[in-house]
Structure formats: C-alpha cells, structure tokens
View 1 (cartoon, one colour):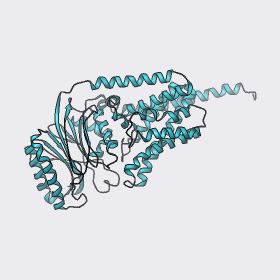
View 2 (cartoon, rainbow, N blue to C red; view 1 turned 90 degrees about the vertical axis):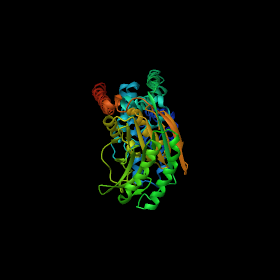
View 3 (tube, rainbow, N blue to C red; view 1 turned 120 degrees about the vertical axis):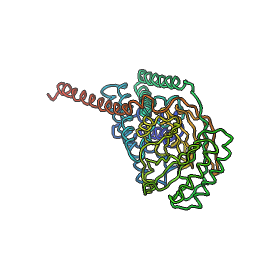
View 4 (tube, rainbow, N blue to C red; view 1 turned 120 degrees about the horizontal axis):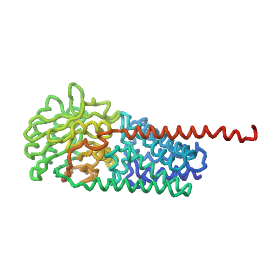
Length: 476
C-alpha cells in the first residue's frame, strides 16, 4: 500500500508540472515520494515498478494535446522510455545510498537522471522537448544555470534537491536537506545576479496571427492562398503607425505553388516597405523539386526575401510530407530564423547561435492548442541557453515575446480571429556568447561518467565486503 501511495503522489506531482502541467514548483517535489521509498527497506523491484508507474502516469498529461493526433507508437515511446530511465535512476540512487551514503545517493540520482535526459535528447524525432527542465521556465530566476551548462543543469538540480529532501526525510539526518537547500539558494542567487544586467536597447516587435486565416496547406489553391495572405496584409497595415521593427507571422499559412510564388512574395514585400519593418512569414512551397516548410523574411527595400527551410519535422505529420532544409539562416540586421520544432533541438540551436550570432530569433510556429505553453517554454529554454531573445508567433497556441533570460515580455493566447501582440523586446548583445555556447553538452557527458563511476565504486565496495562477511561465517 505504501508503494502505491508513493507512486500516486509522485505521479500527481509530475502530471501537474511536466508535460502539459504548469505548476513549476511541483517538479522540485514530485520525485520525493518514490525516492523516500527507495531509501527504505522496500523490495527493489517494487521500487522500480512504483517509480516507472509514477513517471508514466505523470507523463499522460500530454495525451490531452496529442492523443488522437500523433501515432500511438510515438505516444507510447514518448511516455514509456523516459519513465523507464527515471526508474533506473531511482534504483541506482538506492544502490549507492546503501554503500556510500545519502549524499552520494543525491549525486547519483541527479547525475543518472540528467545523463538519461541527455541521452533522450539525441532522438531525431523530439530532441529535448520532454525534458523536466522545461517546467522551470515559469520561474526564470531558477533557469539561468542553462546559460552555463544547458537545460541539463536544471534537470540535475531538480534531481539533486529532491533526493536530498527524500534522504533526510528517510534517515532523519539534516546534512542532505541542508546541502539541497544551499544548492537551491545558490542557483537562485546566480539567477538574480545574471538577470540584473540592464538591457542595452529595445526592439519593437509585433506578432500577428489568425487561427482562421489559413489557405490550403496540402494543395496548391491559388485563390485560398491569396485570400489568407491578403487577410494578413490587411491586419499588418495598421502597424505603419506603431513604429514596429519586426513582424512575425505563424507557420505554414498556406501552400504556395512555384508558378505564382513571386506574386505572393511581392505582395508581402510591399508590407515590409510600408511598415519599414522586417516581416517573417511561414508558408510551404517546393524548393529544388521538394516540398519544404519555409519562412520568408522580407526586409524593407529588398525585393527578394531570405528563405529559411525548416530542418526538424513533426514525426509522420510533417516528415511524411516535407523535406528538411539545409543549415541556419539569419538576416544582416541580426534576425535569426527558426521554425517551431527546430527549437526542440538544443545542439542544433547552439550551433546556429554560435555561427550566426543573432540579435533576436523570429520563430513562426504551429501548436496543438492545449500544448501551447508546454511547447513554448521549451523554445524559451533555448533563449536562456544561447543568450538570445525570441519572438514566437504560433497558430493554435501562444504569441510570446521573451528576453535572453527567459522572462516573458508579453504573452497572449490565439483566439481564432486576428490577434496582434506588440511589445518592446529588451536586447543585450548578441546570441552565441554564453558559457554553454562555448562548452556545449559537456555537463551531460560528465553526469554520465559520474553515474557510471558511482555505480562502479559501489559495486567494488560491495564485492570487497563479501570475503570479510564470509570469514566470520560459522560455515568456515
């Protein structure tokens, strides 16, 4: 019965913090019940299954957005694999606690959970979209560690703090929880210090979106495409008096045939000239004979747009239709171009930022309604990792403006008709200059090595103790 209660408590914590959950503070507490169970005398297999079930049940929050939209096998893997790895991390911490003590177990759980989070990010379908670190975007002061070691640093802190609390609750010792609290305070202090730097300037940005103004996205329908484009052009006209410098529209407004692509682009180029703003808009069209999900970036006074082709595609829904594009693109004025799911892949975004040194990222996107914040906050993590502000305009989702520290300057939900969000985005240097940009995912590899080292040391100590036990046995 105790195992079931612990599993349900952890599941509830994960359900309301990870995935579609929004209670960031629960992510620090969610692992505690199953870790408390693991640090006791409960059978190891019961601990394993309780931990696996807890994470799996918690992860089912994503079904509210993706159930019936993504293939069943994709959802099963999305839920079951991280749950299995979480359970292994809990059991590993239990093993180390019995040989090396509670403080070592804290490091063990945090290191293993982080290493497995890093391992999952290598997946070509979803990258780091499922990381527990994303839950903390709701409290920017706690995620600045991402500028040092990436999102993995936040995962480590979540595991380290929760394991410390669990160990003290189980053993009554104050040292583990003391170390945990001190670490959490130090992390918050670093966040406060980093976020205290004043901006060097501001960029006035407008996000323009309509869930209704959509042309045919899977066939070349000239009339429907121009109708959608004209609706957006009309919505952008009033921005001439708003002194905006950047306008971002959503992803995949319509499919545009090569035969009338120049005409469609010319109409949007006129808006850039009239508003004197860079206009970034998402469409899909054929490039080099293959269908691509693209964003066109129109600069004032420049007839031809810069074309960026999406590189990371939603499994099945997009990958069966579109061909991924080549490397990163940015404009001379420092506007970096990405599209929606590109933001789920930390290594690619880090490479982009180092190569292009963007002033701001313009990100057309298309979400699944209920996953609006859960997907947007993964993109916000990239801003903190690489030190670059972001303007993200998502159909069926959120319009968000955030600074390089992950603070939301403005946010609003799309409502069907046209929504226009205008805000002054703080600027501070260029992206690609953080410690994380320089060292990459070294921390993930170190956590893997630390986890393996602690397990090996514990195993060695266990083996060393066997002969001593045998010598004192009455059988000899």
